Image 1 (cartoon, rainbow, N blue to C red):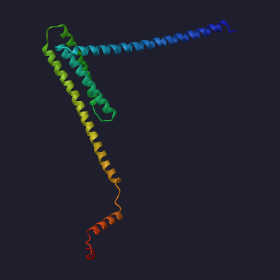
Image 2: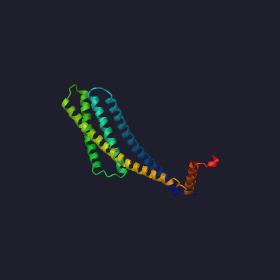
Image 3: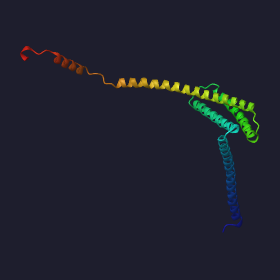
Image 4: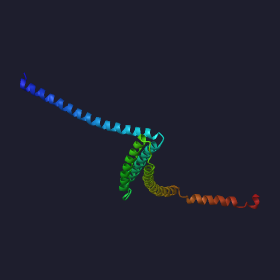
Length: 204
């Protein structure tokens, strides 16, 4: 028989193993729960912004500017990241896009604050709204110009590659054409001379 001391030791080891598994499981659940909560909060914030942007008035216009600014910055970041993955030399352009994103976050906070004030207060600060519109237009225009420049570079690069493919295609097709057989050319010339030769007098 197994001594009682060894049996208790085995039981304690098994119990500690299950406790360790339980602690790891709880840790993972808490971590996943935090991520899910953060994701749900982000989604709810986006939904609320979209709902607010569907209304009328200055507050709704401000929310639309926020959505538009986020979209422009996101598209510009994607374009720059794609160009970097392709190995393009972009100079200080990635740093510039980072600065634009920083200013966009600051403007987004200012727009959110203005929209909140506009929803609860009947008084309109036309000067502040005009400046917010101006800053929004400058940042979105900068994003659009950066994407247009990257797109032009991409099309120019593609055009050079397409021209090379067209030239190579012409060369390959020309090389695959069978060279004319000299015997066939002699036979063709003989046929032409016999057709054009006048008949003798006795055969007329």
